[in-house]
Image (tube, rainbow, N blue to C red):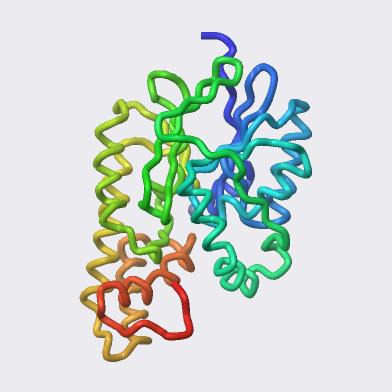
Length: 281
Ligand SMILES: [Zn+2]
């Protein structure tokens, strides 16, 4: 088939260690999948739009986490562009953004965008969008890795999928939202849905394939086991024990902070420690 869309990953030059966004180039325009976290990276993504010299037709969001929507203001740069996601994703972003501001401002300073843009166009499960015969279809997954997730397939045979963070490509993972049971269930649901030669374009690293669901499942199970078996009479030591176990499973620092941010919230949810009355999770 000629006129196949071209998929550009951003940023191109750090091998996807942190966050990925994508520009899908069709004959007449560009469709972005997600934005990035920081102002500079999102500005570079916008420069990618300018460099390709085609209009940005739409932005599709894969889930409700701030590393994927924070850069929308820079990406759309004042253009009137539909930013499309299921209502659940839109509502979650609007609800949680003030809390994300509290967490991310101290970590990233001015690199966390001062002004955030929210998705403005809801879409229902299974609905498709056609751009020059590049047909995107949304999967309204509900709670999974984030409080609300929405992978997108590209093409009728579902061999190209923008999977969001359902699989991290061998990087530490964020589990603080506490929907791991749904996440594990969705891993099996998604594994069964797609052909074995599917290409998953993911939020961190990649692309990956169907076999990587096994790694992701084991990461989640190992983390839950590590938190569950730590000695919570001493929180600091418990934290250290979980980090050591996870570094043993995955000996990299990449996105380690996301895993560390998840330890106490998961311990709270497992009722191993009392919730902090001042801290949100
Ligand atoms: Zn992410």
